[in-house]
Length: 223
Ligand SMILES: Nc1ncnc2c1ncn2[C@@H]1O[C@H](COP(=O)(O)OP(=O)(O)O)[C@@H](O)[C@H]1O
Ligand SMILES: [Mg+2]
Image (cartoon, rainbow, N blue to C red; front, side, top):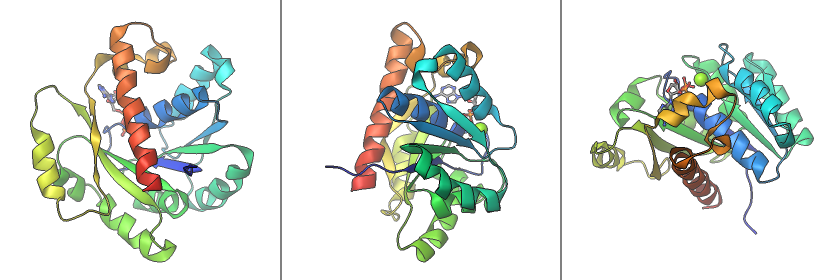
């Protein structure tokens, strides 16, 4: 039997890359698979905890709950305690704060890093890769981590560029799954849902992208 991570975190100190979108879709998807999920929103803007609160009203059967925890010390303590109350915690990381991001990395089992432009941008935006390496020194190679490209417009060839730039870093791989730029992702929060709860072909296709991402993440976790 494959192991399942108890804490999945979406981190990147760069804003607007897709952390909250990824976190809420992960929470929704695993709740639909029957897991008891708590989303921990570590961003002071609290967009994902609001989104989950609304999602919970329109889809009470998912039994999703959200907590906003932005203090690094609280995160360190509470993330550990909350694992007793659910099957899975999904953490939505903040922009800017290395301190909060480090507290999340100190507790999560897998860190997923959405990246919009290029790896060059990723290295410059607070250097999440460096934080992960530092925390791994303390935790004996935890957390697992992987980068994924998001909001990629059809036909852009940044994947090869990204792979080449990443070549030297097999410990934090670039995921094969690419999350493309799709209008349904922008529409979902305003409709108090995710692409998993939206009708129509574009939503179904968009849901397939995140399905594939989470499958790949579990493989990396067990890898
Ligand atoms: N795959 C996507 N396609 C199109 N728009 C997206 C996609 N993922 C996220 N977005 C939009 O991009 C913006 C930033 O995403 P968000 O998840 O809030 O990023 P972060 O939490 O990293 O700041 C939001 O308006 C969101 O709706
Ligand atoms: Mg966010």
